[in-house]
Length: 319
Length: 319
Image (tube, rainbow over all chains, first blue to last red; front, side, top):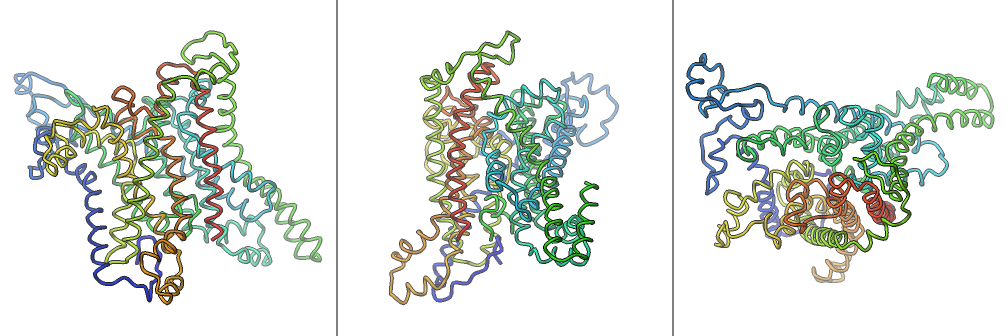
């Protein structure tokens, strides 16, 4: 089985065993090299700050959760006398921080930012997929005047440079008080994602034979009932794949987030670069945040692999 | 909603009871209402979040408005447009963009196509390795770009270590992000790392769309493998390669997030691609009117590319 779900056997022209082995070796070497930065993120997240900046880069080291401690807590420097007078440390993080002559001052902003990412990504995905499913069905089943122009218009909104869109959105949101709000970001991401949702879902719904609905309508279903009870269940896989694509886009988005949010609605991508320790970026903490942020995407990518091609080409390439 | 569903139900009941022509007329009436109900909200959302702001940008581009001042707005006509087209900074930024777009496309296409060709040899386990290769492109360019800053650190970074290990060059003798000559290549490297899988995946679909019998016929005619590659493989995969190239072209023309985090346009303005210049003008110098005009120019350029893209996309679809 292939990753993309395509299986066509080349019969007469099947490659020889040697060609195969060489091809395999090259691809595997490439894959391993491209994995190094991702593995390095995970490795760095378990290093102490000293190990992370050691030269030559350390591959063997004693794992530490200090990066994660620093990510979730803010710290303040204290005198050794002050720390000695404190009651015994309650957790591993507490101990680690005290060994650096610091105390935990409170939770950091990472949990609110992570929560924002989740709320905004899921909220905008839900809206984009709901609107997209209806619109895709409309275009797929009804004769809509100027259908091709409208579809092109919907797609073209996706091609605008985000910074160009951000200028008027910034002014508009400032005027109506949506700057740095979750609602504002959800609406914005919905608008960006709905074009992808319409194009992908139209492809999926086009593949469902019309006869199914027609049969249901002859049996007495109304158009809307047929849509709900026949088309939606048939399109479930397509809807799920589309939702994951929208989710990944909203999760990863940076340009709008960095320009339109600063605190209340800030998501993870603009937050992570500002995780700083004493004297510059605290790389183990940055790596810890990066790792936690990327893991959901890795899982989703593996779930999506059969539909990846379709998703990244707006449904242009189907197989 | 409920109103139209009631109407549709009535239409269905009538349809069941009356001869065909009348029934069809009534049902299509209900369908038209449903079609607009399904499509309308998406169009409205896009009008509000994309088109209205776009029109506003066009208006602002003819004014001297500055978003951080409340001075009265004065119309300046096409002054901004003519000064942008003669602004050396803008032309410098377009050169930086062209360098980035050109080299990422060349490298991603060559490496991506080669990888696709190798994977199409169907060695053992090619499915798993394909999925692994695809991972970088799904990740957030901002978050991953931020981490590449760590890999590029001259004293402690893994990239400099690997280069000095392989070539013997002193690791601190070059700074990927700090050197005027190297920084434009540093952003190309990260983009190629992230997006080669994208080109690879589309090329793979192209290679797999070529039917076996063509190769079998070529084999009968004793065409050499070299000849087969140039006369069959490449021409037949070309529409797919074009699709990938155009999509990467549009995306990289708009590039913001990864470059903003890696170099922020520096050193000097060597990596200041169009979106970074736009961000500086719009959100740092607050030249709202001027940057709106630049945004419109960029938008027209991207829209032109998108037009070509959609035409190419339709041609691929017809196959």
